[in-house]
Figure 1: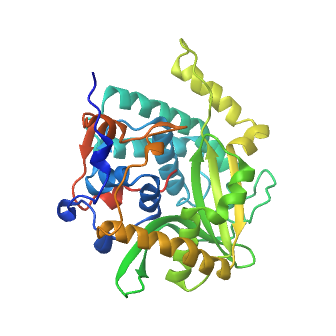
Figure 2: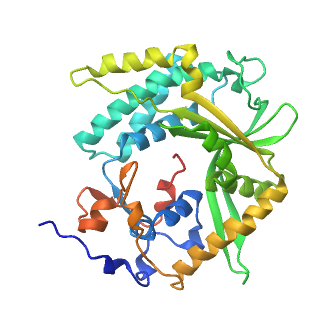
Length: 352
């Protein structure tokens, strides 16, 4: 019988933080770390404090990471990249990925091959669809109802904003914004790219004022620059949900995906933008009712004043088993590696 770790192990005060690979006060906290803490304190401890990371990354994450990196690099060019430049971007990402994971498993290499193929099938059409992002001399081939990008203010910029508690002790809220831009009227907006397979536009729109990452970006930008953004533009790329036939060659499968993505009538299915406008008063209210209580909760847990416990509902979700499932349930660390101290923040991304 497989050994299961008793639930009592996870109840009570957290472990000694002396050997932690992360420090709440020295390194600060990002939106992805806050989300992880909210999901499950034990998963947070294993991933952030203990530094565990799975050797096997699912397609959803590998696709998001590759697409996000290619979009970042593509927007640094002076004009929308065509197929050849997009393939070069993907090739550059693959070299970077291999340099960081020289001992990747065959299973993971197969996932990466599929990832690169899917990104290659979508990236040129993405830049064709949003060609107007490159300035007034470029046109959008299709009408859209979100703000036009008149000028990029910053691409992939890091921020580190002080957060002061009521007793005056400080930590920092850190992260990386995809971009900010000016509209033709001069207003400042946040631009944030996402890769998702399932998108409910109405739900996404209605819950944006409660989206931790989006609100944190708006708050941090205001605190950092002194200018309050008028809102955020979510730039969503839908990962294709096509099923590959049992005997279907990969090339044929990817050609099938590419053919559909390239069809203009399907562009609004795969490339979506959703906007939220915000006021300074709403950001202030969010800081008071959400951010400050959450930061107090994390601090209390870090200092041992708040309990440590596992969230059993987060072990298996609609996306499958959580990354730390085998460690939590079976105490099995096979298939994991541990990051060095100081590298946790560099691995934490906001690509979901």
